[in-house]
Image 1 (cartoon, helix red, strand yellow):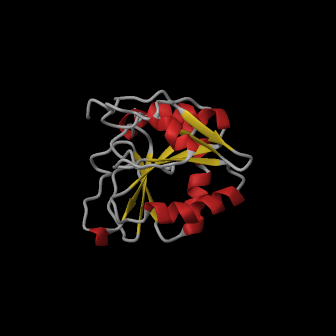
Image 2: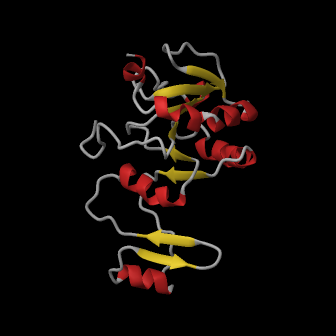
Length: 194
């Protein structure tokens, strides 16, 4: 693993985490857009942490918050009655720190945190796979993958569930049940069965 990706994350039973891992072009964000309302209908409050592979800015140049952040405020928090945004420069980091990001959402007490991206990180994952994307299936090399949702039949390692990628209701049911399975799934597959 890369030096910026730890071997372990500090999990606990109070904050269920599930990674959504897939190659670009598989439809992670589109699927999450459809799943989030279905999970909300099932009574879950879901936080999402999304990895970006590039620099991004949620602030607008010229606005007070942007000017103050550029002047050195870290973090810069902007709040209104409708939303809160925290912006912080992270110079010198090779990668975002998922453990720190999980701690940032913890005070909001979500029922579940879905992590989009961070596919090299040690966390339980649902892999999304479309053979048409032309990329390899990751489940054989990633012991953290607990299920694979695909639009094709696949041979999967023991202990990995097969899900139908185009069955939104079944996927929502599987993810909605994740907080109940979480206490026993905080380790890679090999460790979980031994």
